[in-house]
Length: 96
Length: 244
Image (cartoon, rainbow over all chains, first blue to last red; front, side):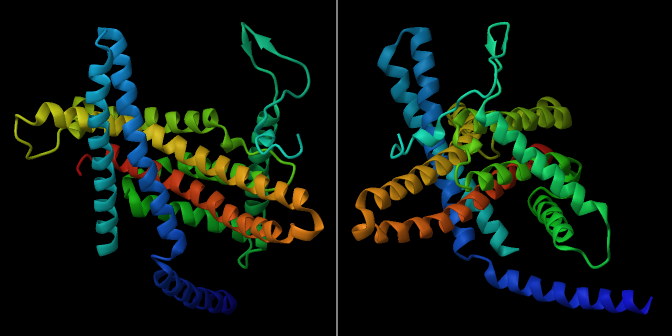
C-alpha cells in the first residue's frame, strides 16, 4: 500500500508540473496556427454558401444576376459575423 | 507519372468491381486506408486497455493520454452536459488523426485529402448537431437565428445572415481539413520532384525543404484533427446550451 501512496503523490507532483508547462505554452505557435486556419476558412465558406444560395434562387426565379449579387454580399456579412463570433469566443476563453 | 504531384490522390479499385443497384461499391485504396486507420485505432485501444497496470506501459500511456485529451477538450468547450457525446467525438478525433498521420507515411494514401470524405464527416456532425438541438429545445432552437436586441427593421436581414452563417459550418469544416491535407501533400510532392529533377548538384536545397515541410505537415495533420474535433464540440455546445 505504501508503494501506491508514494506513486500517487509522485503522480500529483508530475501532473502539477505538466499543467504549469501547459499554461506557459498557451498561445504558442501551434495554438495560434490552428486559430488562423479556423478563422480564415470560416470567412471564405460563408461567402461560398451565400453565393451558392443566390445562384440557386436565381435559377428558380429566373432573375439571373440580381439575387446572386445580393446573396454574395449577405454571405460576406455572414462570414464576418462568424469570424466575429469566433474572435469573441477566443477572447472569452483567454479571460478565464 | 512519377513527377505528377496530383497522382498520389488517385482513387483506384482493388479487387473486383462491386455494383449494387447502379451504385459503385468497389473496394478502393481509399477504403483500404480507412480500414487500416480504423483497425489501428482498435488495436491501439485494445492493447492499451488490456493490461491495466498502475505504472502504464507506453501503449497504455498513449491510450490514456488520448482519452484525457479529448475528455478535457469536451469539458472545456462544451461543458459537462456534452459528456454523453464523448464516444462520438473521440471516434471522430481518432479517425481523422489516424487518417492524417497514416497519410504521412510514404506510399500511403491520405483519405482526408478527398473532399467527399471530409464533407460526409462534416455533414454527419452538422445534421447530428441540428437534430440534437431540436430534440433538446424543440422549436425554440430556431432562436439561434434571432439574436437578442436587434431592431425589428433589421431582423429579416439578420436572420438571413445568421442562417447562412449556420449553413456555412459544414462547408468550412470540410474544406479546411481537405484543403490543408491536399495542399500539404501536393507541396511535399512538388519539392520531392525538384530533388529528382535537380539531381545531385542542386537537389540539396529542396531536400532540406522537404524535410522541414514533413515536420510542418505532421503538425498540420494533428492540428486539423484537433480543430475538427474542437469545432464539433463548439457546435454541440451551441445546440445543448442555447445562448450566445
